[in-house]
Length: 205
Image (cartoon, rainbow, N blue to C red; front, side):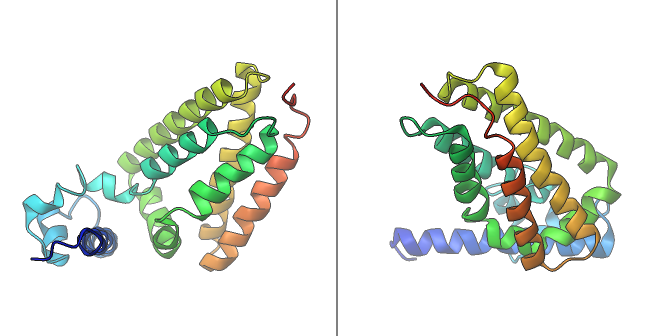
């Protein structure tokens, strides 16, 4: 057994990715409800109890990147630079928490399969809506705190327009069968359009 922390971390990341890919493959082949945690673990060549060191449940695998991206986004908002316009801050949030997130490549790889899965399982649709509401609420509160020139309505509108633009364009691209790189470019364009519309928001004094 190695004592190299970097090696251990890379091994954990590989196991986590194997679980995600195995789960989504099994969900597509057998169905979400018919797939067990034990089957996912076995396919990823780990013990069932080890599964719970990575995820609390099957649906946590489907939404594997949401929590880390939210935490990173809130952190970036909290580190707003003095005098930084809201539009510039939100562009940084997207660049550093969505496009540069450690899960971004994996998310693009499994994106179409995940979208199809969520669309076919009512329980996952409900979980997605709950997560989306929670993400927008937390981002709104963080933005309102970091940008005192914005009232709560303005902060909520800014977050809603940006998150909504990204969410809908990803779903539309994946429904059309666009390649990951096409979806990535579409998200960048949607981000630009949404953020351009934020230039009317109050600027810091």
